Length: 275
Image 1 (cartoon, rainbow, N blue to C red):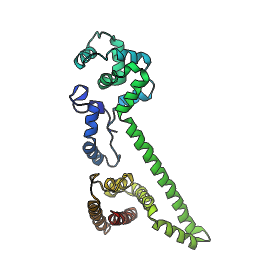
Image 2: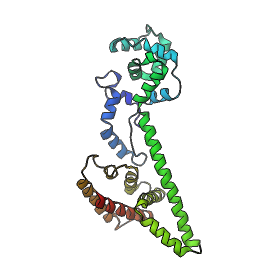
Image 3: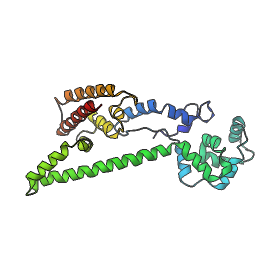
Image 4: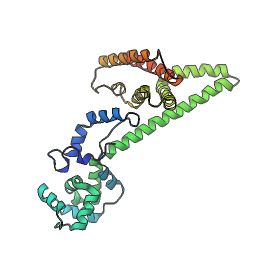
């Protein structure tokens, strides 16, 4: 999360809405941050953390909404003078400080327009403008995806053990070979390769590549290119990545890296054919 998005750019008093400004620049800014923090994060999302916290913790009351509604008719400069005053009219210093603690300047400026509809409407506004909905979606979808990959990997591990220890191991080996060659298993094998690399060499460049492939929803995201890249260009980019990993495979430092590059070669070969 890229927190404090409500102070992005010129902040609450700027000519542009700071949240919208943050989202407008999120792609380029998030890409830079994601590259810098690639070992720790896969996606960077602009979020107004204070708004998200207040909307989800039940702190905002009907009394707060009523007080906020008294500010609805004030223009921006009048409101900012009130918020900075030592003796704010309409609110009083205690309520003024409480609203700023709950909403910040941006929240007070924006949420006052719906405060007449009550605390529920204010909380809805906070949720919509905080960016927390996108964070929840990303968390839920990512956790679901990786949980499924983890289960599939565990099953494959059990099959590998049976292929060594079970009396019917020859037949089981045939099954595991068939499973591994199924295109539907490519993502599972990439996940297995990533787990191996995180144990062997978590700072290796191939870790970033595996993470991007597993996190991407489209071929463009998996290749790290513009969303509107044409199929022909996607095939070209996949071919470039294929050549790159093939060169890397000539000299690997660990068995885990060798396995990872093998899966990358398989993945980029498939993407180049399908694009």
